[in-house]
Image (cartoon, rainbow over all chains, first blue to last red):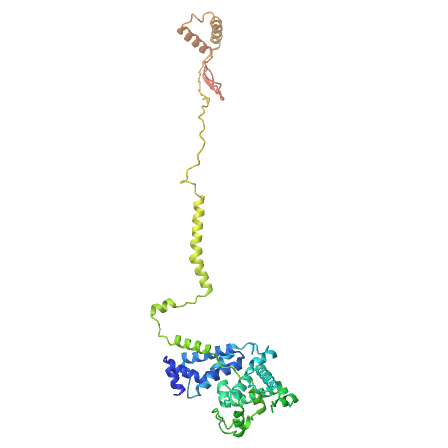
Length: 197
Length: 213
C-alpha cells in the first residue's frame, strides 16, 4: 500500500495504517532530528510532533510535489529550527574519554586501540558537525547520512540545487579542517588498521 | 554508512545505490564523492528511537482520533483565556466594591448614637432637699400728694403718735392700728414688710399740676 493511501486511512482514524506509516519513516526522521539537534529527547519531541502534525493535517501533503519522506524531512527541519538554541547541548560537548568504553559495540576481535580511535572519531565527527552553521549542517546530514539527491535536499530546505551544492562544499571543507588529524597516516592508526584514506 | 554502500557508490556513480537513491545526472559530476570524509562520517552512528516515543505517539494519535464529545461536555471542558487586565478589573468590581460598601456601612453605624443599647447602670444617689430662696418682686406705687403746711403738722402728729405707741400698744385695737398705719401713710411712710429692697427705684415727683419724672 502506498504512503498516500495509508495516510488517507490514518486520517480517518485507522490505527493500523498509522502504525505502518510510522514504522516506515520514523527511523530516518529521528536520525535527521538527532543529528540536527544533537540530543535524543529533542529528536523524539520533533519526531512526535512531526507525525502528529501529519495526522492532524493530512491534506498538507501533496504527493504530486514530492514523496512523503521528503515532506516529513521538511516538517522535521522546521520543527528543529524552533528548538535551535545551542547545538548538542545534551552532553556531547562534555563527553569524556572515560565514557567512550560504554559506547563501543565492536566485536571482541577488534584491537583495543582501534576501539578507542573509533569512539574518539565518533565524538569528533559529532562535534565537528555541531560546529557547522545550521544550513550547512542540514545539507551535509541529508546528503551524506540520509543519501538524498541534491534535488531532494533542495526541496526539503527550500533552496535551489546550486545553493545546496555550495553549502555542501563549504560544509565538507569545514569538516575536513576539523577532522584533519584523522585523515593523516599516523603510525598508531596504521598499526590499528584504521587508516582513513 | 557501511563499506558496501561506499563501494557501490564508487563503482557505479550513475547507477542507483542499494538503498534506492536515484542519482541525478546533474549531481554526480559536480558533487564528487569524498570517500575519506564519508568513511569518517560513518563512524557517528545515531541511536534508534526509543519505544517510549512509539507509545507516546500512539497515545496522541488515539486522542486525536477520538469522536467529538457532546456539546455540554465540551462546554464544561472549555477553556477561556481572559486577559490579565480584564481579570483584575472584574476582581475589583466583584469583590472590592461590596467590601467597600460593607465597610462604609459599619463605619456609619458606629457614628450613630446607641439607641438600642441600654445605658450603663448608674449608682443610686440619695435624694437631697435643697432650699432655694424665692425672691418676690413687687412694684409698689405710692402716689403722695403733699402740701407743705399740712405736711409739717402731720409730721408733728406722727411723732407724737409714735412716742405714745409703746405705752399704749396693749390697749390698741385693730381699728386703732389701722388708723395708725393710715396716719403713717399720710405722712409718707409705706409699709414694706416682707419685701427686700429692689434694684430699681422709680420716683415720680409731682409738683402741683406738673409731672417731673
